[in-house]
Image (tube, rainbow, N blue to C red; front, side, top):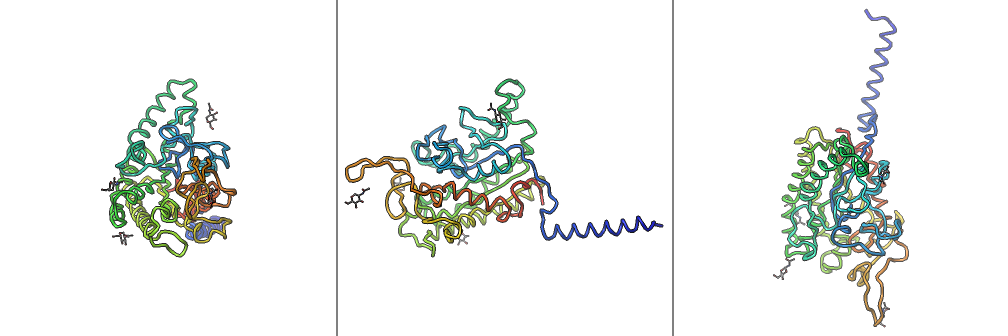
Amino acid sequence: MESPTILKFTISLSFFCMLLLFASTLNPVFGLENCNFPAIFNFGDSNSDTGGLSASLITITPPYGETYFHKPAGRASDGRLMIDFMAKSLGLPYLSAYLDSLGANFSHGANFATSASTIRLPTNIIPAGGFSPFYLDIQYSQQFVQFKSRSQMIRKKGGLFATLMPMGDYFSKALYTFDIGQNDLGEGFFGNMTIEEVNASIPDIVNKFSINVKNIYNLGARSFWIHNTGPIGCLPYILANFLSAQRDSYGCAKSYNDVAQYFNHNLKEAIVQLRKDLPLAAITYVDVYSVKYSLFTKPKDYGFELPLVACCGYGGMYNYGVGCGETITVNGSQMFVGSCERPSVRVNWDGIHYTEAANKFVFDQISTGAFSDPSIPLKMACHNI
Ligand SMILES: *[C@@H]1O[C@H](CO)[C@@H](O)[C@H](O)[C@H]1NC(C)=O
Ligand SMILES: *[C@@H]1O[C@H](CO)[C@@H](O)[C@H](O)[C@H]1NC(C)=O
Ligand SMILES: *[C@@H]1O[C@H](CO)[C@@H](O)[C@H](O)[C@H]1NC(C)=O
Ligand SMILES: *[C@@H]1O[C@H](CO)[C@@H](O)[C@H](O)[C@H]1NC(C)=O
């Protein structure tokens, strides 16, 4: 027979359990601990390239970087990218690009993203064409695979270089982040494909993405944070090149955004399947599209203006045509194509990429988990809920 004290304890314990159950039904992250990610390994394109393409193929020049770094910093923006704000919020240093051989420090991660990267092998590669040779298969199969094994050989050797490499157990504890797919759509739109053909190619693009996630998991990765693709039809490089494309009520090219949304629909379904195939993985799908789109639908609410117009550029109603940082001759005199007066209130930096202010806004929204599936904050994204 239970003594009254034990009974009381049992009752209050079960009451406590019910409370916990209730709280966790209301909020699935109730009681979860911070993951304390010791490193980030990032894969992607210019949305998260911290210097890879600039170090290897196309040098980023002024006025890129002017807002935060006060000099070009390998990023396609006036300042920091979402990946920078993510690293900072997790207490980690900004990621060095894997391709940057000068001064790189990989002790808390590495960035395999390069600007102009695609998921699928692109047809036209820099310098003969517009796309990065470092597409997702290469970022995984050549670069990440080598990085994982060679960094550990270097650690074993000791000395100065060992201190620049991540510890062996970081690979399983790290956050693996992805922001890629926009250029697969862009390659289709700027190639000779119709919108319908680009749309029809999406299942294959997303399938190739999934294969890479599985391969990375098989090397020990467990926590994945995957951005969907943004509203490409709101960017000057689409708007200025497809002037006759139908606009939505905010001035964005509707069918181009529809294709982006179809990509996101496929990506979300692929992630549902990945969760089944990779039972030990915590995979967070992050709806970056909705947050970026809100910058075009309600810019004033968030302190922004002229969201469809490039801050740094020249030409036409979207201020896009001559590239940011180029020099042109207008009315017989030379003119440097520089930044607009107030990049801090602008959404678009150079016609393709977002300003630091916009990147910060998007980061602030997504890091809480409010736009994630499952709804989990960035710092808790190791939990398989
Ligand atoms: C590499 O980065 C880590 C973490 O930020 C830092 O503690 C270390 O001093 C850096 N190493 C060098 C050689 O700069
Ligand atoms: C599109 O087709 C035209 C005519 O066949 C060709 O000249 C051009 O190079 C093609 N563009 C791409 C990106 O394949
Ligand atoms: C893309 O394909 C899907 C599935 O066939 C279809 O539902 C959607 O309307 C298509 N979107 C566009 C813009 O063609
Ligand atoms: C060039 O000249 C035209 C015609 O006088 C003028 O409208 C335009 O503003 C000038 N452009 C620049 C950049 O000064």
